[in-house]
Length: 164
Figure 1 (tube, rainbow, N blue to C red):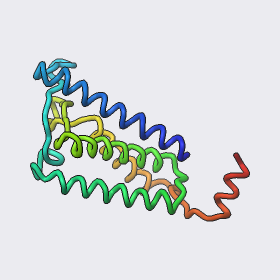
Figure 2: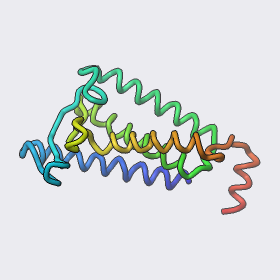
Figure 3: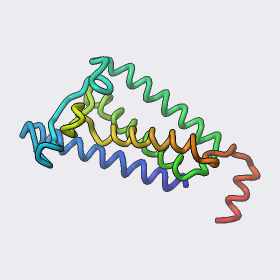
Figure 4: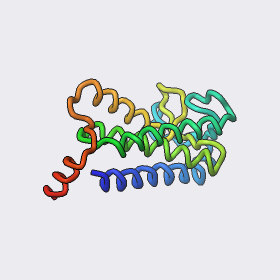
């Protein structure tokens, strides 16, 4: 599952970054792009804070938090074998979203946001949706799935190698 996770991670981060390039090159110039009348549109925003624009111009805090989250997930992925598909999907989504926004914070100094629904005023980006959906899936997985992760042991890894 590790190779699939890496491929999905790269594809999701690439999709996020390409969508942000579209926002920078097209949406920013137009100012506003209506996708579905009175429901869904694109509007360019440079978010120098976190969700809903809180803690403006504190990029270093968000960079540290993202690195800490990556460290925790990295430890869990190193120490344990993911067995649940829902847990796996949640992990890939959260890490992809976090990394997509980390790229923006490090290289631009802000996160590019551009997606907005009329019923939900905050402007978001694809990475934000990855994180949100991943967090919901993670909660569902932890609450309702019996098999999410198992400790890595030599016995488990040897058994896996024999089944391949």
